[in-house]
Image (tube, rainbow, N blue to C red; front, side, top):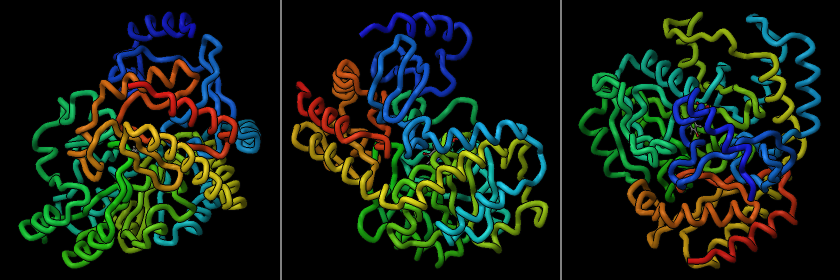
Length: 421
Ligand SMILES: *Cc1c(COP(=O)(O)O)cnc(C)c1O
């Protein structure tokens, strides 16, 4: 595989940006490689600066549910661009998108459009604190909720392989109010509530954890969270930045039939543009400015190009809900191929897949990090050399899109089957 142009660009990039990248996992450090520079993408392929065409299972870390450069989405975005890129004023498109989202997720009685998942979760937590008048929050080990200060404690994603699970530059006082629980562990959460019950503003969780690889909630776990948060008057926040529109139109909350107080969305909802959402119960969201005293704002929030991409993407998904069935069938073929190798533990839900190089069933942070990242690195190299682009980290999900052809899925299954020790 020729990577000359990528390597040349990488050399220049490292002289300009920390590690040559604008988000750490892209540096491919945990698989001991240098990154490929992507020139363009089409359907289920990314094409790099050396002309290598690779079957893509990163899908921009989740947004790409329709595949790259979906013709309808691109057409709408091009039309919108001609009408101006940003106005900083209300638009009809914001109303349309907000309405589509609420149709899919009725628990989002009121919602706000923001620019990134980080911003959405940070703002949801602020609203929960403003509403309850409490300071403490609970998050689970291995769940990632963006890089805001108070949440960089036992975060997943790149924070797991980057060796900085607790970031430098975050004053201890910023995280003093962040209580850490274990995902799928009822007893640690009960203990935190017994000790701090009436001080806990919110419990924020990925209903399906997808930033320590994919870890599914055990039977009854999400219902337990709903019950205990009601009991203590704590706001339950589902961070559905990955699961929203991925597990179905109604996200994890519909899939598991558990209604949170607040929800955060990102990735798919922006159709590939920088857009995220937080929202939920009317009485909580009405604490947000200008109605209430919780401040939150954004120059580019509700941007007309981003809302256009979001509307176009959601419209396709809402018109063709059978996409989800097809995504699931394709992903099941890959899951079976991984299982057949006998080398990995496979967790799958819908079109979210995690294959862990460990012998233990993966149900929480500890079992996830028992994975052998050196074996993952070897697997990564095997996939890449066979034309398949997977996440350069054991702790990221594998994403399947509607653009993955059956032929490419079969090809991928074959390459997985040839995985050497
Ligand atoms: C990606 C992600 C975020 C952060 O979103 P950004 O747009 O990268 O800031 C937050 N929560 C979850 C669950 C995510 O997967």
